[in-house]
Image 1: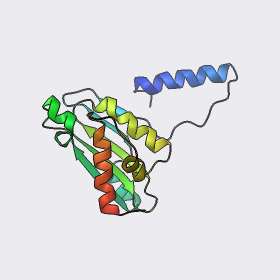
Image 2: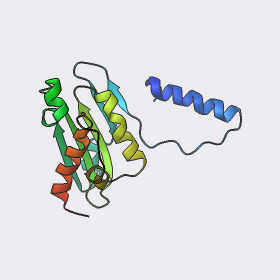
Image 3: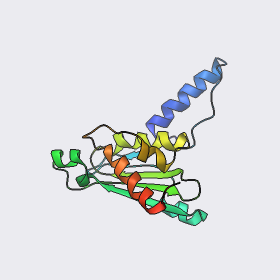
Length: 150
């Protein structure tokens, strides 16, 4: 992923650690991508097409920014967060955001994917209110309602 400044910096850090004999944990499975446009677009993990092609049974949770209190405060009428979960393992497979602050919000999805987190993380955890990050809770609840309790 040399075209991403963030991964290039990480590759440099890893190279320096290797040069000085510093042990490193395994690299993360996923990296966030961001398109700094209007609206911002950001993604991490598998796309819905990739999940479908792999044959994994999955469920989608969606939250529109206008559904969040922060979206109302900011006057945001567009933007959304889409989360993809495995039905069998309940693990988060991908997170995709279009809209205000997408490149800032994607890191929550990245952390949950890289730590093997599930839909239950989003349902059982507290998100600051009112923030656009609350969309993770809304999307998690959307998927959880479709999947049922674990």
